[in-house]
Length: 491
RNA sequence: CGGGGUGUAGCGCAGUUGGUAGCGUACCUGGUUUGGGACCAGGUGGUCGCGUGUUCGAGUCACGCCACCCCGACCA
View (cartoon, rainbow, N blue to C red):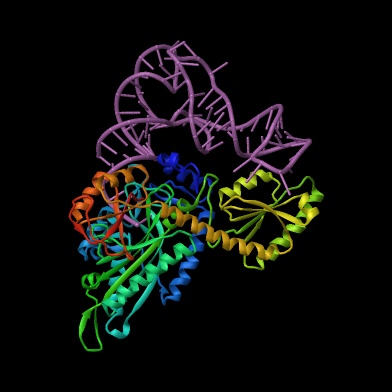
């Protein structure tokens, strides 16, 4: 955990931004709010993609692809959905450019105006449900369990690398079911897939919960979420799974005939996670030396660095390093041997720490004599000399331990920073001074929620699914409450 | 769209009362180095955001414009 976190809280944003750039993950582009994901950042996304895709397939889903453009009229079919997204849409109005006759250069050809404007998808419910209409007539056509990997565009006012960019990469699952129960079951199944991915692969503990009316997805009946806590005490929504009820089926008139020969609207879910997860990974684990990647998502598990005085020495080290590399690759690990002579060992140490490589091996003349290597684990920076023999079992075990340790550390941090409060004074104090999750009673009204937000910037992150019923009084209004909800200042 | 700030070398910045365009870093060359971001010497690189004005002379002063960043509204 970062040492100077408290003193750094005020400029945590700056620190985060610098880290993303310095570690070579991404940078901002020439286009407002857009991001260039650099090879190292993209390699992490590819890992996430690979793991999630497998999990989706194991739960019976297939991939498909729907168009980038959505006719404006589709968009306006579901009232809440329009309301939620209209303010942040990129709109295509023309399809041709031309050279201006008055020498103003390239201009939009006004004669090439689209009959109906196209929206660049901010999410695909509408185009997909318009399509599903043609696919569904009977209960025999259900369920439809489809996922799409895509880019979407949301013209947000303020952007931050990975956390909120104008264009971002994500996956969106869209399923159709015969019954409400089945759809709800699917919603929770996918919420659990996300939770398991976050905890077991990202080593980030999550709170599973349901969103309040005002925080839920535009067009959903209920939005389920996994909420994570970052090292600066702010919450980050890691993924959402929506129970859409029959809202989109009604908007797009998608009905099916049941076994009992009854005509009914189809039940729906949608769920997604985005490149924001990379932001979560960074802010959950990094320290002042840079990133710390969980072994299960690290593009490179082990980096080997030679330390040598001359060519003969390097040749000997090369041989040893290559043999170690081979033995580790045989165990399914990704290994990089960096024997470039353009950088000194110390420079490489710092560089790979910045990039968060879980394990580093250094081999020098002393090690050649002793048949040993210097091993450093990134999570604790603990350094020790280990024998080369048996290293191909030592390192896989160590990687497991690092994965576990990272999760435990993050879990302890979250537990330490999840604070139950019972009074409004206490609430304001905790939110303003240290942040974190604050567990408090709430009267259940959007009005109170809104006022708390206005006065403290804290929002209700979720109503945790594993909540125990508990009689209490709303910290703001004093009205009766049946359970605590989770507040935080969020990204 | 409101409030604040910044534009000078690839990046980070300094530039005093207006008087030859600077520093750190990066980059290139040569040498010595290599167990925690090496050192020495030499070198490349700038339409000072854009425009107009004041002046013998503008990075510096005035006016106008543009871009970007931060805080808020919006949000995965």
